[in-house]
Length: 94
Image (cartoon, rainbow, N blue to C red):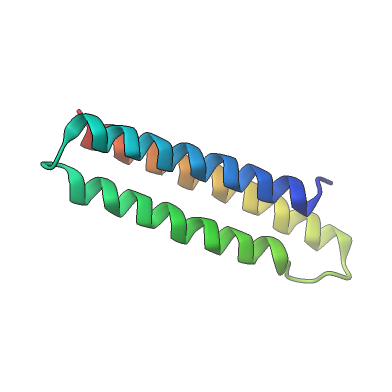
């Protein structure tokens, strides 16, 4: 099982990638798409805070099987939400 520190590092890395891509899109697209891109940044920050809370508070700390399932579900959720944010950003920047 991966450590909580590793999961938090993954969360930070992926959210930083989203935010940096959003800032790059703001630079190249200007004011016409600003509000939509800012909403993606806000969503990414809220997502980071939610994932940190979930990483720090697993469902049942005494049952190792449930803890593993909790963190596996977190990773699946993390990848699907991050992929969704990248897709949304690419749709905006077309």
